[in-house]
Length: 156
Ligand code: ADP
Ligand code: MG
Image (cartoon, rainbow, N blue to C red; front, side, top):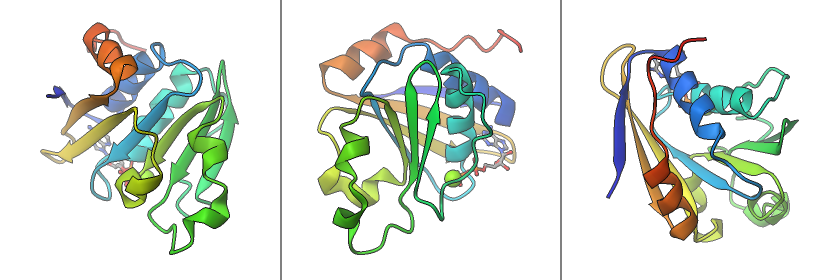
């Protein structure tokens, strides 16, 4: 079962994530799935803003992990180029750390992921339109999805 919304542009995707960030707590884990250009990094930028991160958030494709500080720590990872030795990265420090962990292409590391997590699917449905689907695993995220709703009218 999933929760699906349409997002009319990059700013709306960021606003969605910014609102979702208000529901996040220490050690939360978000798995971001979607093709290149679907909006995973754009989503994370909104999430960071919602967490009160003031630094510029950009794609960690080459660094794999970037850490930011807001009202909670934010660990932003893109594991697209993770290679064949994920164990060398010390993933557990982030996957099971104190901060909010957001992982682009998380399914590539399926075996390493926390069992309880919120998977976020982004799908391109037009040049500037995306659909977003939240798929909760575990009680914490089921509750989060039941309680969260996106208010598209709240501007910035
Ligand atoms: P990914 O990290 O999934 O590869 P990015 O967030 O880096 O994707 O890139 C998404 C691109 O699509 C950006 O250039 C962004 O401006 C554009 N875009 C257009 N519409 C949307 C939307 N509704 N949501 C997110 N990004 C969008
Ligand atoms: Mg990206």
